[in-house]
Length: 90
Image (tube, rainbow, N blue to C red):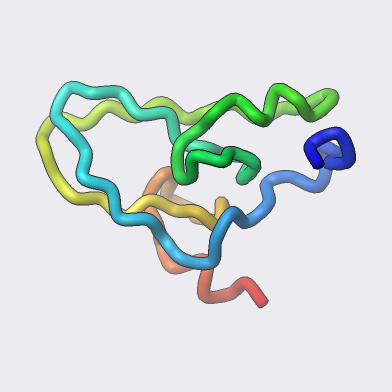
């Protein structure tokens, strides 16, 4: 599948809803920016298989244990958090 995806076609929407994640204080998470990861909303390195990919994971470290809603449509204006942009996807 990844061999047929062009860099220009990214990011793709992994899902049309956010993912609730319980994050741990001091732990660094790698949020997927391309939409190809099979471990959504986290990066598994799939972006590296797209020729000429300009995508990389977004590293985020949290200061406290808490629940966050992470974007999976990859259209958010406030990454890695969901801002409701998935509601505009048809």
